[in-house]
Structure formats: structure tokens, C-alpha cells
Length: 166
Image (cartoon, rainbow, N blue to C red; front, side):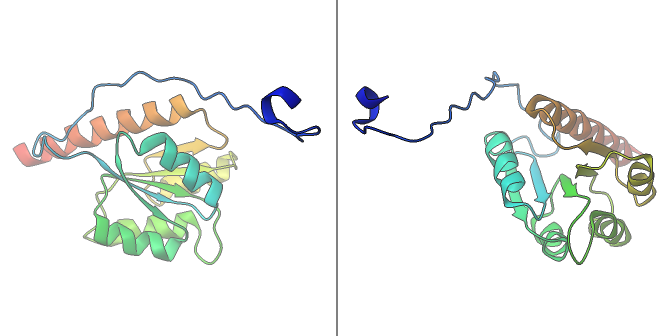
């Protein structure tokens, strides 16, 4: 309105309401309690990278990659605890990236979650064939993403601990 902006015709205004989420107790790796989990987000869409960054950066250390090649490089450097990977990207799609991650001894044990707008059985099957542990369809609810990440990290941490005890 004119009273709020001082302008006669202020144009459009948008009001966004993001759900409030109480701080969930941080799940930490048993071997290093003073370190936060690291997540690598690989998506060619800047808006998705930004959204995931805003959603997750307060609870996790994030690294963002805009392409499959950049994601592979960052996975080796950053050594993430989990990778969120877009399925459809130019040059190298998410399945190719996942397959390369699983073939590399340095990155093969990192859980990979595929994020995609496609929810056909073929894409799901292909993602699981190359080693993805989960498949989240865009658009996703923020709470769904955070809960799935927490569950997967807890599972990965438990299996890592079991391997160390053997």
C-alpha cells in the first residue's frame, strides 16, 4: 500500500512463509564428536543449490557443485558424509556421477541420494543400480529432505561403526 512504501503504485509484493523447525539434536559421528556432518550438493540449477544451502547450512557443513565433473572433484577434496545429486544434468548425468563415485576407492562408501523431478520407475531403478541409497522427488518438502538426511546419516554411521568393530 502507499502508506507502507511511500509509492503511489508500488508494484507486486510477495510474502513467503517458511515452516519453523525447532533445532533437532545434532547426530554426530562417534569417532569425531566435535565435527558436523558434511554434505555435498550437486545440482545444475542455481535455485535448487541456493534453497538446499539455506535449508541445511545451519545444521551441516555444505559444499555446492554446479556440474557432475565439479561434484566428482569436490567429493574427493571435501570428503562428504553424504551426497545429494541431481539426476538430470548436462554433459554428465547423476547416474554417471554416482557410478564414478562408487568406482573410486576414495569415494565408494559415501551414501548418494538422488534428487530429481522425474519419478518414473526406470529412473529409480537406474539410480539404485549405480549405487544410490535413496531417491527424493522434486519438489520436496523441506521437512522430508531433512528427515531423510538425518535417517541416512544415522544408518551410515551405524554401518560404519559396525565395520570398524569387525
